[in-house]
Image (cartoon, rainbow, N blue to C red; front, side, top):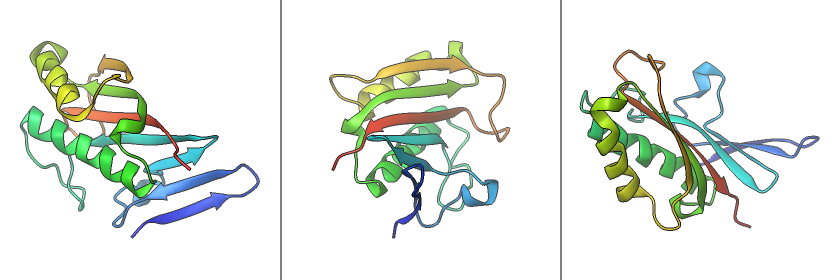
Length: 138
């Protein structure tokens, strides 16, 4: 069941899944504005907010699945993504894994992408976080 809120004056619509694991942090999972859907960074966590594994690829697959779930709630899909931002804690160890994840979840024409190594993410056991911008259909 999707939950949406709209700020009518600004034509910004909040997109959330149920459960909304971001609500306690006062973060929208995504917002729809101006023909775009902006998905907040998604990590390798389950619906209860627990990290799914220490393994990078398992976390990455879950993070992409979470992006896809939020997009589906907003009426879009990974095929509508035009830009992704991928944040990793160890680029040297996981660049090939990131390429594998891109190939598994994204298709031609591949979206624009920013890949960054960061010293840490919101939780110490997170290895990857993915944000996305997609076209809002309809």
